[in-house]
Length: 330
Image (cartoon, rainbow, N blue to C red):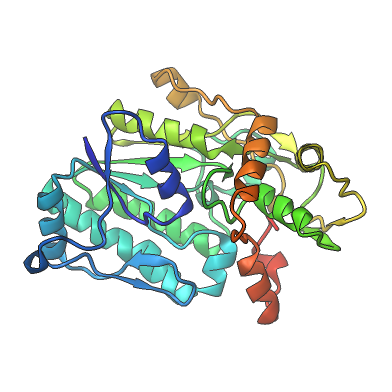
């Protein structure tokens, strides 16, 4: 089975490729070998993030035919409330228009799309009361959430066939630049004098190692669970303070005098997601415990000397932007 993953340089895409099961061939596709077949037009924003932006169905068709694409995993996006807030124009072009372009081209070619969604489309007040399931009420509170919800509607209405998969707080693996876990580890390793946490230490977060999310995605695709949406989570939430304690144990450093807590409004509180629907339909289940996952994340960071997940934070500070409004996971 030939799978084309858009946004191949992104965190999720890179790990989907790494954890692809046997029988799956991941096709990367910026340029085609045949010049006459043209190429898939992409451009880079001022942050260096690649994104699909041109509605050129002929180029897409040529690419699909040359590579005999069976399924598209649409992952290309500017992600995270902070990045989108800093790049509102570019993110809308990529996250919404780009999704429309790829869906229309795939529909013409008769190729189904697996869309990588996000839980920020849900009414976040519901997280405080219960675990979220696929059918819970939508109600995004950020520009990023609105873009992703709009894209989900595009996928459902403009695709040949579709599925939507939503991770909750995936972390670890290659290219993790947004998770609280990665940022905290990196800041601690670099001996930051103060690590600001813009959330309540007692609120629970359901973190999942990216390898478990990838196995969930591949399960959905290989078992052809089309025409539905699937939440994928560890279902093992922990208070943020406990997550930090595990990080302390792994890196061997006490952070109690370094971390400064900044509790925020309720919508930045508990985040819990159920994957019962996928578990009941398949044999999938998460396998990586939080402690093991944090150890893997730490090892990944230690093995990548040039890796800096705080880039967007530093840039925002330079531009005097208040991240507390839209960046709960600092």
